[in-house]
Image 1 (cartoon, rainbow, N blue to C red):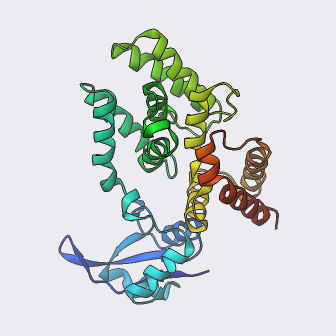
Image 2: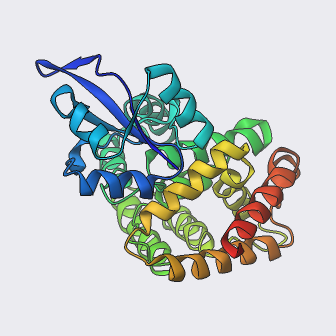
Image 3: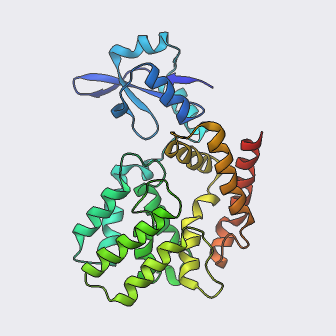
Length: 293
């Protein structure tokens, strides 16, 4: 495990900045930054930006000085690097375009939802996850287009996120009911959106619930990422629960993984099984083995 810092060459605010990263975990990175009095606002998704004047001090405190290429390779190998397509600045356009096609004339509601998804305490349940679910729906829905209620449920399914399983889904469902009724949608469609949001608490739709199967499969598509992407997801989940001691987190996370591995089926639609099932099982088993080691 190592904290790495590259050569300060990135200009901003009248100085140049270096990047401070961990080659192992965000928890290690945040602990080092806190001990070194690096402000939280300097964190940018997978690294801290630190001014040139602090470079020598941070090296003296234990950061290893490397060139930019070495730092980038280490960050990628760790699985912690956030790809450009998942960074907040890259998400605004794709999300706005999808919303306008979905519910034109309600830009204010989109802005509210994106603000909710962008709350500072979130690390995984962010606009990147929202866009990933919407993209997954496009991959597995018949003809690439899911029913509007399913897509709206994707927008609302983690709109309220406080880390309280079950309560978050219920609060998100109630938010959907209030906002969509105010937007003029018929109560039948509003009720269907809320029902689908509540389903994401357990990801166990009925065998004849095609809409629920689509949403649940899209929400769990993250489990089928490549190993580096899955490690990044797991690290982000741990960061959302940074307030929970390691022993308690490991036990709780293990129960979640065991629940997911016990789901039969884990993915309900044939396209999702083909795209993500084999890799998802491998990822879940690997993480569970690490937790138990």
